[in-house]
Structures are given as structure tokens and as C-alpha cells.
Length: 262
View 1: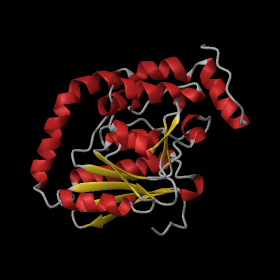
View 2: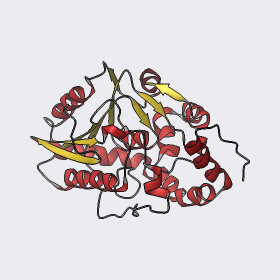
View 3: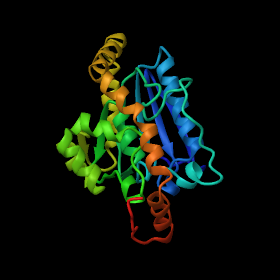
View 4: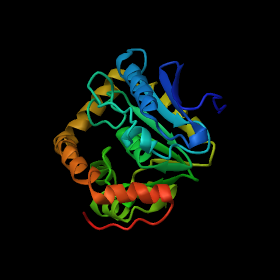
């Protein structure tokens, strides 16, 4: 894929009934600014609302899917992040969810919200060089984009707690073993394979596919709703803590954090 010369965007392309959504900020390992998150939300909303779009593919330019949030732009004194509303599809699937199928292609560094975004979709294709990590608790905070329940849904309690509590980096093959990833391919083939899967899905009856997804979501809807309702309490508990401040400070100072549990 040709990388854009303009960093910090999320662009999209129509391929018949498939909408290809590309995270394009490779010079910063595709870290998200609030503006990029809104562009992603708008692209997902287009997918959800356009009757001629039946399947979405979310992928990224460059060597990495995403290193996560550009933290100062979301939580610093000059933060420009805005609350999610039902006017657009939430990339984390916590407010408004996309009713169309989404295939996500990941590679390289796929940290924090990258994991949560892919799990908000339906099918994940990972390059064999993908490196996953849900590291928020290493920074004195906690995942706020759905990891706390989607890991459990996809991987089971033990596998979920293993990686959420260790905050370890794990491979594409481990992600496949525990069910977070559906296919592992050679590096550079993940987007092509995701597009192939999307095009195969698009050959099926779109209303049937959408109804099936909606029915499947009903099975876990009550549990998800309760888990989503818990997020403000989680945020309130961790974001204003001394440990959160220490986590950010240690990251900036490039040293191990020293947490106090306060």
C-alpha cells in the first residue's frame, strides 16, 4: 500500500459493496489523534448508513496497525477529544455499534485501542509479525474501550485475565490460539486477505448477514450493556489517581513506573 504523504488521517475507498477504511499516520506508528478517531467514526457511519455498502475492512498504512492513542491530545491540558454520541458509529462499539460486518487487518504494533477496535469488529486477520499488548495498567490506568469484556467474550476468563493482568506483549499465533484472531498470514498479505474475506461476505445476501449479526449480538447484549455501564466508574477510579499520574510521568521519563495503589 502506498503511504500518504499527509500524516494523521483516516481515509476510505469504495470497492463495490466493500468500504476499505485506512488508518494513515505511519510516521507515528498510526497513533490516533482525536481528529483521526472522528474520521474513523465518520467512515464507519458511512458504512452503516449507505445501503450500497455491505461490508467494511479496517486496515492501516505502514508497518504497524496502531501504537494507540496520542495521549496528550486526549488527556493533556490541550486535549481536543470529544465525547462519543449516537450521531456516529463508535469505533469501540460502546455507544453506537455498526450493524454491517467488519473485517480488520492488523500488523506490527497493535496496542491498547488497536486491540479494542479490532474486537469491536467481527473478523480479524493478523500478519504473523503482529505484536499485541493491552498495557493500560502499566501506565496506572485501565482499558476503557471494551477490552475488559470483549477479551472475556472472545478468549474466555482465564486467557483474558492472563493477558489483561500481565499487560504482556503477545504474538499473532497466541492471539489466534485464544480466539482474538481468526487467520494469521504472512506479513504484507493481511490487507489483501481481509479484502478477499469481505468480498466473499459481500456475495451473500446483505440483509441476511446483517440480521444474523444482530441476532448474534442479542445473545451477549445484556452482558455488554452492563459492562459498558461500568466504564465511567472505572474511569473515575483510575484516571484521577496518583498511579495514573505516575504512569504518564514514567512513560515520559522513560523509566519503570513505581505504583502505590493510590
